[in-house]
Length: 319
Image 1 (cartoon, helix red, strand yellow):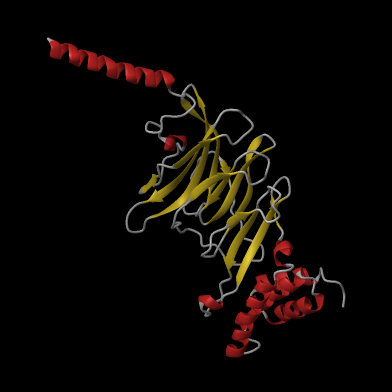
Image 2 (cartoon, rainbow, N blue to C red; image 1 turned 45 degrees about the vertical axis):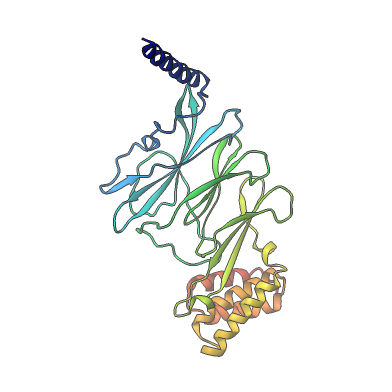
């Protein structure tokens, strides 16, 4: 009898603990073990593809007092040729303990499949003056992730997404919108840094300029610097290169190495000639900039370099 009473009291204690936990639970936070976020991506997947479970965060990222749930998912393929083809960013709000979609973004589309899912498509852009073509119809390899950080200095957290490039989603003028999208083709990841300590971050996107038949150590590096203009992030490479003599010297050394090894008019030098002309243009060295860019117009084989050089030459004052 005594043992039966003890078991009964123990059971009641456990019941009271669970009841107290349920009564004290915060209904604004979803029970993550029961939420299947891919249900917000209703379109059927092509055969052999699956939705990832998603990376999640809960924070206040807009002008409401309630916290939002941010989830990053991918459509991926298992097996030997595993990779992912499309990333999705879900922003939701909680109503009576249930998650409701506020916004859905489609990111880093490989172009292999047409995911007919309602949402805002973020077109990732090639960095300005980086003419590498992004391969289409190929899966993405490597991870995709996000961080929440106040990049714009307005007191509201923004969404920094890092994958094949970088994208930034920010709450501006009453809506969530993309304020930066850029591929990167370098081993070093993009980064945000407050260069002038004003509470607003600049964004640096490094790139390696590919040159055929030249080893990676001799391929020029490039950095695209974006800064906040109050509405979106805009390119301001003049700010990065105007006084960056260290970068200029490194670029000249590699360029001279190629000249000494292969010859003055080797077509492979067109990339170096273009970027040297561009840096001298940013440094307001008009005479030297004109010399390099004219060489590109006259000797380059790639049309992208020729057109870009011609457009910059038109901006230079007459000799």
